Amino acid sequence: MQEVSEFRMPKSVLYGRNSLEKLGEQSKKLGKRAFIVTDTIMEKLGYVEKCIQQLNKKSITVSTYNKVDAEPTNIHVLEALSLCKEEKCDFIIGIGGGSCIDAAKAVAVLYTNGGEVEDYVQKDIEIENNPLPLIAIPTTSGTGSEVTSVAVITNKKTDVKMMMKHPSFIPKVAIIDPVLTSSLPPQITAATGIDALCHAIEAYISKVSQPLTDVLALSAIESIMKYLRIAYEDGCNMEAREAMMIASLQAGIAFSNASVTLVHGMSRPVGALFHVPHGISNAILLPTVLEFTKTSAMKRLAKIGRSLNKDLYSNSDEEVADYTLGEIKKLCFDLRIPNLKEYGINEIEFENAISKMASDAIESGSPANNPRVPSYDEIKELYRECFNYKYKEFIKKSDY
Image (cartoon, rainbow, N blue to C red; front, side, top):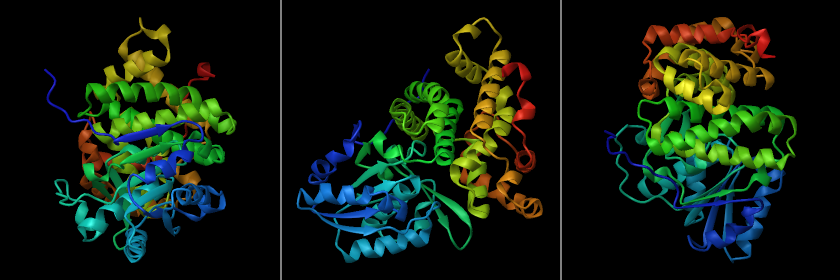
C-alpha cells in the first residue's frame, strides 16, 4: 500500500518561446520594487536588460546584484541580502543558471527570517515567515532550481556545500523560456543536461520515490537521452532546446519531491573542494555510482532501458539494466565528459581530500536515499574509481 506522500511545485509555471515577455505582468502581482539576482554573463547577453524593460513597462523599480559565481557562496548571499534590504525591495527575480536562482532563494528566505545561511541547513528547520516572493527564470536546461525546494550554497569558511531544503524555497513563479538557452555553449549544454539526467535517474531509483515523481522522472530521462546530443551539437535547434527545458523542469519537480541519491551526495564535496562545476562532477560520478547501485536497482534501471528501447521487453532485467548503463556511458562519451584527472585535478590532492569528501557526502543525507546505501569506505573507493574512469573502455564495440 502506498504511504501518504506530499507533492509540491511552484504555484505558477509559464512555459514557451519568449515567455520572458510575461515577466512584467507576473511581477505586478507581487510588488513594486524588484531585486534581480544574477551574474555578469546574463548582463552581457542582454537578458537582465530585457527583464528591466519588462518591469519598467509596469512601473516597477529595479535593483540588481550581479556578482554570483558558478558556485554561489554565503558571501554572495549576504552581499545581495544587504543590498536588497537597503533598496527596500519587496520581491526577487533570480535569472541565470542554478547558482543565481539558488542565491536568490536564500536571499528571499533570509530577508524575512534573518540569521545566516548555515542556520537553514538542519533537516527539520522551521521557517516562520514567508520569504519574499520569488520569480525564477532559468537560462540553462539542467539544475531545475526554478521548481525545487532546495538551494545549495557553499560555505567559504569550511568549503562545504550546504543544502538548504524547505518548501519555502520553492519559487512563486517559474518562467521557462527556451530561447534563453540558445546561447549556451556546448560544454555547458552538456554539463547542465547531464545534471538534469542525474536528477531524473536519482529521483526514479530513490528509496522515497512516489508515483507522481516516477512519471515525471521517466519522461525526463526519455527526452534527455533523445535530445541532449542534438542540443549539444546544434544549440540553435529549438525543438531540442524546448525538449530539454521541459525535461529539466520535469526532473527538477521529480527530485524535489523524491530526493537525489548517491551521485549528488558525492558530487557536492568535489565541487566545493576542487571547484568542479556541479553538472560536470555529477556526470563524472554517474556511471561509476550506477554500476555500484545496479544490483539493488535492477528493476528500475530495466524499466528505464525498456522506455528507451521498446525491442527489449523480452530481455531479462539484468540485460536491460546493462543496456541502460551502456547508453548513459555512450552519452557521456559523446558529450566529451572528462574524468577527474582529465579535468585537471591533482591526484595526490584528491587522495588527501577523499576522507573529508566521504564524510561530507554522508553528512548531506543524500546517500541514504540510494537503493544500495554505501559505507564510508565504499564511498572512498568510489571516489578513487572515478578519478581515472574511461567511458570508452566500458562501452562494447558492438554498441557503436
